[in-house]
Length: 508
Image 1 (cartoon, rainbow, N blue to C red):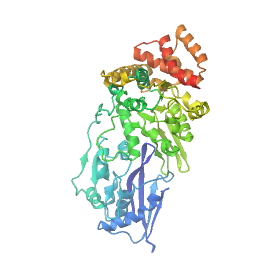
Image 2 (spheres, rainbow, N blue to C red):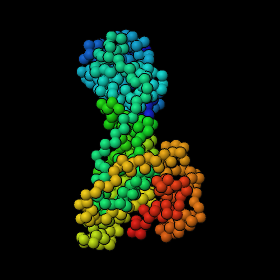
Image 3 (tube, helix red, strand yellow):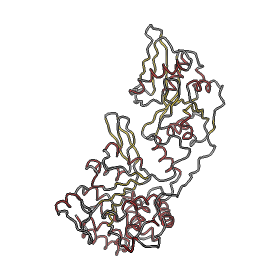
Image 4 (cartoon, helix red, strand yellow):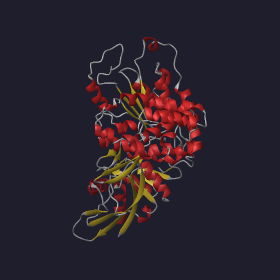
């Protein structure tokens, strides 16, 4: 007898429905054959399913069973098919009516005692199941809060295989109906760090405001203790609140990465990722056996902070070049190709030299010129060219450290940032910000009058800017104008934007 159940698999941050076809063949060889490009975890599912079925008080077939996972030409990964496989086998063996499986998507990993364990990627799976017309989802109880984010579905949370059978037979009253309207974003503006706690560093504070308003990348250069890390940790507090599509996209990425279990709401706070400098290229951009998203995708719509950037390995730093341009990352491995979103603000910090005190008037530097050049050379020219703003932080004076007057709060800065972002949405007609304008949008919205054009041409020659550097100065100029509430870019806006590249260009 043929029985058909339904499950789902994740590919990238999206999902697709998988049809689980089970048929019994009367032979003396009681084995299970699984076809349809399964990975090792799925092949091993036959042992988990066998033990779980018997532990739950059901009979396991004593004849040959063939399982096909359709579509058969797409590789399947993970243990989320266990529950659907076990239920389809019971239906094939007529221990369960096959009609019970026709309109339900079943998800979950089985333990040997029949317990149903949570799995990663529930949110994109439930979204795809709803889009495909399924109204009932059988899923692990531990994944229920995440699945509740999708409205209009009947969810059956189960803890064991026996519970799953009872739910399909209508003998359980544990069904939960998800919300009838889209969930609201519970915005949380109580960040761990606030700009009001930062002493001095007026230029760096201004640079972060421009970066937040336009989505620009920033490199901070300064001696130890000048406040680089603290300023970076304040960045999420001045970024605008996420929209519903942005929050859903961020939540899907974290769901696929397995970081969303037992959460009952969308991720409403923009991500802040600060990986250690020993991170590998695969962990940064994504990859591994199952092509999981890396740090740059987990920072999507948020901030990626590289503290002491020259200490990161050269391959890791160079791997950032393409995502910084395209805002997506294409992970290509032997197991296939995956595309993940990677639209983040890059904040990087470094010392002026290996000891950190080059140019410091109060503390001498023992680094030779060759050592300083080698240290700064760890950040390649092409990578620096993709960082819109380079800002220098100086040692704080005793007066600044002991100042009783608090600086401007993140809330006040965020209001200006949100106003500037609103101007950009009106002008660009999308969620794009100035930093990722296309070339056509750049030419159409950043046309300069005679005086600003003359200033930009002069600075391009003086700073020896590349074509990319020229366009990035123009983008930053547009953001400075937006913060000033100006429709046209003025000469002072261009001059300020170019000043944020002057220090690094002159240092090189």
